[in-house]
Length: 103
Image (cartoon, rainbow, N blue to C red):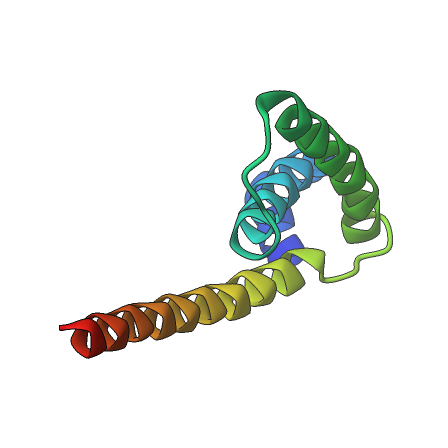
């Protein structure tokens, strides 16, 4: 669906790199929402370099094999966003309960 839209919009020229950037951005957002921890800057650079290499492979699946990776990444981001929002609300209510019990 996204592949067809982008093909209609831009044609086949540079389609791989367009999808690479889209997949990289969506993968970085999914990583931040679901898996990122506080790391030193050196380790963070290594993680993102490996993410860039993995995204290159995923982009091959997306463009050559026409697999719906962009759509899957959007769904993953949506689900992880809901999870993080609910986790934030739960932690906030726990903090409020603890403060009420201490008062």
